[in-house]
Amino acid sequence: MTKIRENLANIKASSTLAINEYSKKLESEGREIFKFGLGQSPFPIPEVMVNELKNNAHQKDYLSVAGLKELRESIAKYHSYKNKNIYNEKNVIIGPGSKELIFQLQLVIDAELILPIPSWVSYEPQANIVKNDVIWIETNFEENWHLTPEKLANQCKTNKDKEKLLILNSPNNPSGTIHPDLEGLSKIAKMYKVIVISDEIYGELSYSGSYQSISHYYSEGTIITSGISKWCGAGGWRLGAAIFPNELSIIKRAMEPLASETFSAVSSPIQFATIKAYSEDHSNYISITRKIFISISNFIHQKLTFVGVKCLKAEGGFYMLCDFTSVLKKTTAINSSKKLCNILLEEIGFAMLPGSDFGFKENYLICRIAFVDFDGKNAISVASQNKEIDERFIRENCPKIHKGIEKLINWIIKNQ
Ligand SMILES: Cc1ncc(COP(=O)(O)O)c(C=O)c1O
Image 1 (cartoon, protein in one colour):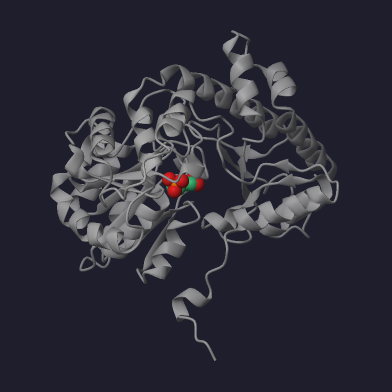
Image 2 (image 1 turned 45 degrees about the vertical axis):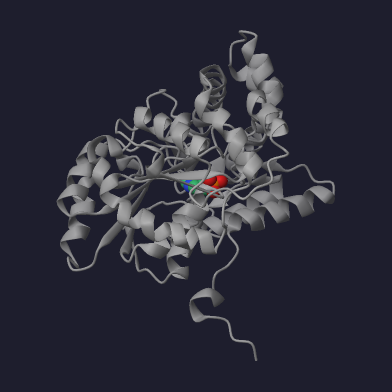
């Protein structure tokens, strides 16, 4: 009988995909589904990038493994500015999405992986594939759902012999919050020589507009991963970047042959077109998309807290963590976040993701909602006409968000 490697046999498809499939099935049966599960930017890719892709459709050659030099140069320039360090094109590797780059980093770095609870769904399975140990550290609402310096220090004091890798994601998926003390955390990381992968895929979507990174304080130990999937909705282009400090060039050198034996290089036309993502000024586009997300986040936060759901306003990206524990105290049949998600999908067509996917214990009634189920092109066009982005804007231009939240609120009131 065919044997599957033990560490791969139990890896399951993430709930994100499962919920999406089930939502599609229900929709095909004529049900109205409110898609608060899948996290994909609703906004169109900036036209200048799309046109550049058309202009480069003829590019047919394999590019170098690390990526097109001009693109790496523009990424290095961009991140030198954002991350307040000096990078050049030799510090950059382009890959087919930052997810693949994070995976390859985990493959080459022999270390135990420290993950805060909550963390993005893919970090742990990737560590399992490459057989790195995972150490989960709990965080809480009061800590903004982020790892405190004290907790990192406590972990680093144990098992001092093993090298440590920390994946940090701020603005965060699933919590939508920004780490409140990157400087404090950097001091501990520096003290214990922790290698940090700073997943900055939502960096441009920080609502305050200020780009915050642990690399501002600990550039020598930080590998930045980022890309075009979130801020400009180009997830399907599959292009991400990893930016290495000179001090960690040994890791980059180990990754290049690996990339050459696996994905070879990212699609040429996409690389040529992506130069425009980094070299052109997209501040108007980003600012309007941020404003829309801020208003939706405020709207959802206000509605949910009013009925007693515990949640923090998003500070970046397009997610929010919602704790239903106190509002569902009496409903003992709902004893896990997965069950809560299934019931809401069945009963009112509200799709969201269980907190257990992000590291929380199964019985914590914490779930992630993504607020992207609207026509981004239309929303940008209406918002650009100086319209106030208020509840009326949301009702008229993001109707599924408005109706979905209303349905959720009514369901909560009924089941309280
Ligand atoms: C936190 C986080 N990191 C990384 C990624 C992967 O992005 P990419 O499209 O660059 O692979 C995602 C995508 O959902 C994400 O949410």
